[in-house]
Length: 389
Image 1 (tube, one colour):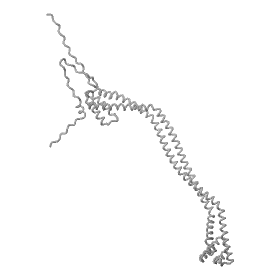
Image 2 (tube, helix red, strand yellow; image 1 turned 90 degrees about the vertical axis):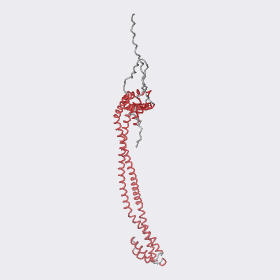
Image 3 (cartoon, helix red, strand yellow; image 1 turned 90 degrees about the horizontal axis):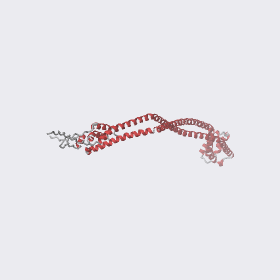
Image 4 (cartoon, helix red, strand yellow; image 1 turned 180 degrees about the horizontal axis):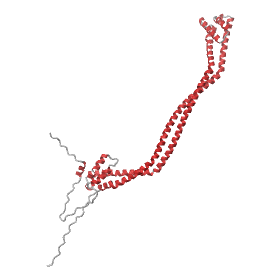
């Protein structure tokens, strides 16, 4: 089987070499032989191109591969005189010129930046010193505020505990002071209910016989609790079991006396409760006041705890800024020293670049074919003097 023949790949450099104009062999006119033109001696093109290629590695803003391709083909493009270069060689040379110019601009920018930094050194130092003092004071003030906020929390906690104790005491006093009145209110309520729901219906004969019997039992029980006359309580069932119209004089006297006693006891309870009311109101007011104080202090404590937390965070942040400012001031001297060194290095680099690679590049870029030296004709041999015949 026949394998296809691949076209031979020609290296990039050889391509440029093939594009270079072909030189014609020199011809001489008949006559005395002309002397060869002399070419000024100097660094070889290859050596200069290597120097330029090394410098181009520092180029910024260009793809490294592009810089590599151009630097490796400098000799191909700059090896020929300017007027003999192919347009492709001239194009690559132009790109190389831009790269070399960018290197010079980059170094000059670094010099300018360093010089501006050094020129502002005093101002920058003063600013950093001021920042140290400002942040130091802020940190101190923030710390003091944090301590004060914590103290507020402690004070509020103490006040809350005290208020809670006062509330407990007030509630105990209220309970003890109101105990008798509570009992009398219970009696009053029971008495009013018995009068209205039992005695009056029995007196008016509005209940069934069984209900009257039950009501009489409740009235006798209540009468004993209220220390009614025993004879009165004994006579009560006979009087109330009769219809109102059937009751005799004695029955009516019994009913009336029982009613009077009930009303007397009720009036006495009302009087006693009325007398105790101001003290009860005072105790209730005290409890309410203590409870309100406790709730207010709870709200205040919650607010103080949040304020304390915020103050602690602010103090920590201020301390961080203070440390950062102090660190920046401490670093100022070394930074200025480094900037001075960077400035010197940049100037030295610019000097080396300008006097070295850039000069070589400019010479090769603008190198033109030297003019041939004028031909020197061989002097004719002197004629022999004539002899006398």
